[in-house]
Length: 154
Image (cartoon, rainbow, N blue to C red; front, side, top):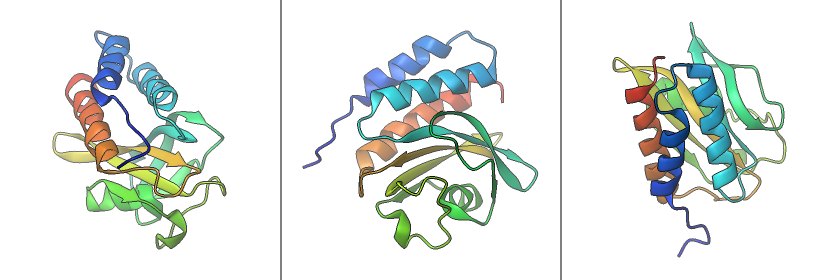
């Protein structure tokens, strides 16, 4: 049994409530990262990287300063974007090519974001706790990203 229980339905309602009808992508991503960061236990970083050419560039986030540019073929974020699939990493030190923006990070989950069927960015969460993220988090965060894909004008 997980030591983390997150009510993702309420978290999605909070994201919806703070972003619905707001036409500003940056503001909505900033508020979404704040809702996620404040709503999940033991999360040390929550934010977005947006695709610019062949690299991911830092977007709105909550947490310590982060890497500004991530090549598509590097790290958990680059892998999620390149493979177009959520990466749930229980031990970042065991992940080939992991980029240590924060040396205290121990686990990570990254969800690709799409527009017109193409990856345009990722939602990235880090934790200082090993194996912090589980399938419940994958499903909940993918639901939040799905909402953003449908409602925001990326």
